Length: 139
Picture 1 (tube, helix red, strand yellow):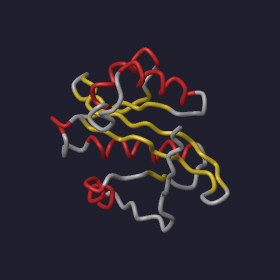
Picture 2 (tube, rainbow, N blue to C red):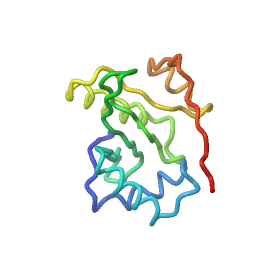
Picture 3 (cartoon, rainbow, N blue to C red):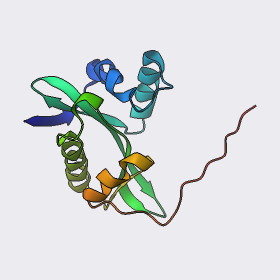
Picture 4 (spheres, rainbow, N blue to C red):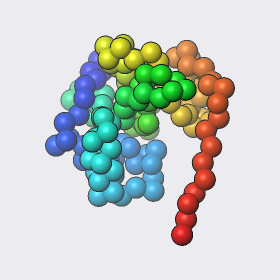
C-alpha cells in the first residue's frame, strides 16, 4: 500500500536521496536552498510512502498564465529506482491531479524526459503543441 502526502519542511532533506536520482547535479545544500526558495512561490514537495519509507517524490506548483490558464505544473516526479514500476508514480500523479481539481485548476502540465514519456502516455498525458525552449545567459 502506498500513501501520498505533502512533505513538511523538516522532511525535505529525506527527499534528497530520491530527487538526486533525477537531478544529479544538485548537492543536498543546494537542493534544500532551491526548494525553500521555490516554496515562496507555491512549490511543494509531495512524498509517496510504502511501509513508512519515502519511495517517491513529486514537486509541484500552481501556475496561472495567459497561454495555459490556471494549471498545476509538476516540476519533478521521481520514484526510487529500486521500486520503480510498482504504482508509486501513478499514485503521485493521482495526488497532483486531485490537488489541481481541488484548487479549481484546469490542467496538469509537466516536462518529461524521453525515457519517461511512455509512463505519462499510459497515464493519459498527451504532448502539448508548444515546445519548450531556453537560452542560457552565461557571463
